[in-house]
Length: 384
Image 1 (tube, rainbow, N blue to C red):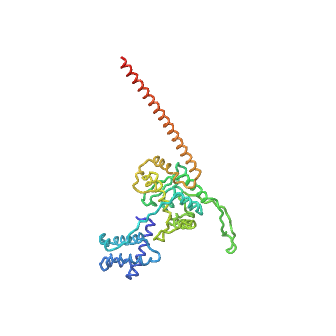
Image 2: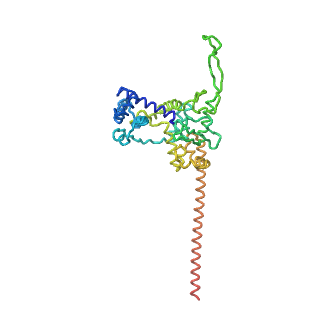
Image 3: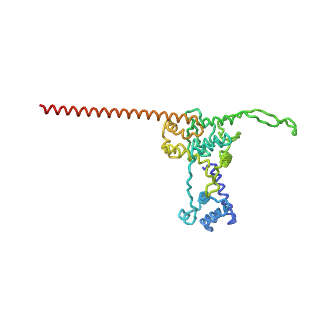
């Protein structure tokens, strides 16, 4: 069974195909399926015409090769589901899909992320961006996290990600840095703060309702989504939250002058919410923990799935400073600790070198004395 967001995309692509069939053939989807099955219309010609239709309808806003390919593959799957046989070999020969160009996307630097965090205009966006940059979450994974999914008291803090919102459909637990732990506490304290609420009373006449002012503190519930602003009895959709927060993020990039678009794909920015996930993967891999990076960002097949939690936590503590961006006090403290250890190692090395030098001198003296004794023995032998 496909997820809700996948179903929405699938429905959009079917509607696009329905428009194409109606405009070009003057019939609906059901009728074209029947005609293809009766061999009155060649399925490969239909799919080829659909590709041309998509290109012509997107002349002003160029459709990316990957998007076009997804549209066609969805319809191909739909036709096969409708019992229409499509030969993979004939499909490859007769239906020319555009080549998908794999663009090289450079990972963000730590300085870039610090600049973006400092430019965030509200605490929710700042917390969300830091959450992505410190945990390597997919965008909707992070938005699906509930109050009861986070444990800010454990050392290190942890967050549970539900499998129904992951790409691999597997639950996982992600460690949190001390910096994002404190940021989450600040955000939740702000979200559930006492606030003034104004509303019109209901007992007075319609024209002269009295304005009533009250102070209310929202009730914090375990099922509340962390990054949802307004939440009633109905659980909000993480995809809906994404649309809102992605717009705020785009405005932040534009305000910073970092909202450049990709070359050849004006619909996509060079920096996206997924860029932070690439940063986490690259950073941990560069530290020599490539396998752990696969586990940390939730890729399937990682060898670290079977490791003990204590082993995972120990590695995470080593990479934590590299996933910290604004907590200068802790970074300086840890840097001082590292420098102290380096100084201690240098002192030990110096003592070892001095000891080796002393040993070398002692051995040389012993060798000289041994040579002198051997000479004296030779002299005594000759005298006899």
